Length: 111
Image 1 (tube, rainbow, N blue to C red):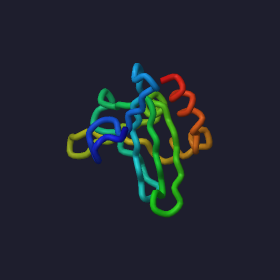
Image 2: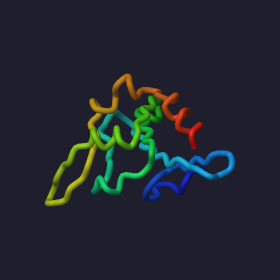
Image 3: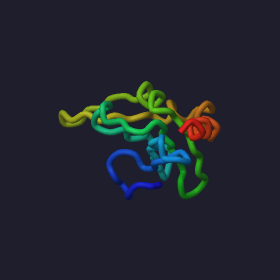
Image 4: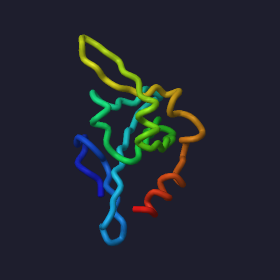
């Protein structure tokens, strides 16, 4: 079940067959190779899984990360006294995450 476009929080909610459990999935679509915006606070990072899709319009590549993998790769940037958090491409564009759909399938089976 997708959520509304640009809604705060998770983008996709996946339920098991009897709706007794669910997974939240955050999707980040990027038109080119760039840092992934995580938000203004790490305490607000939602979703058990993050799917980062780069080159969305030309040659899409998906990178699948767990929430924990996102958090340990995130760095803080400050501008005009305001903090924001990002993941640099070199930290998510690795073979371990590239098209790692089996990771998500295992989780979906558990949900």
